[in-house]
Length: 48
Image (tube, rainbow, N blue to C red; front, side, top):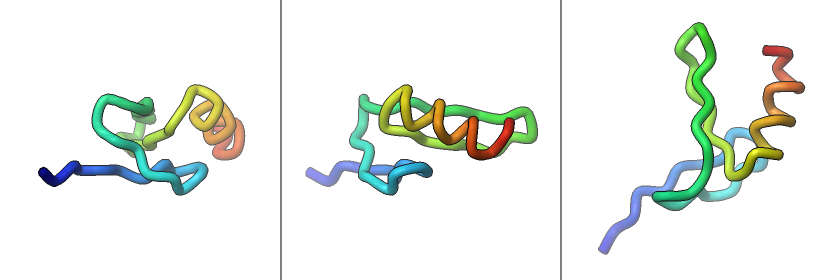
């Protein structure tokens, strides 16, 4: 069985199906994060 994994845009770790958070900006860019902390730090870093 093959699992489709995505990479966390902040930490670079693999995100398995059913895990992680997807953040979509108003300009339609998609950011995948492993945890709420990753998304929070990514948003602060990008000044969204």
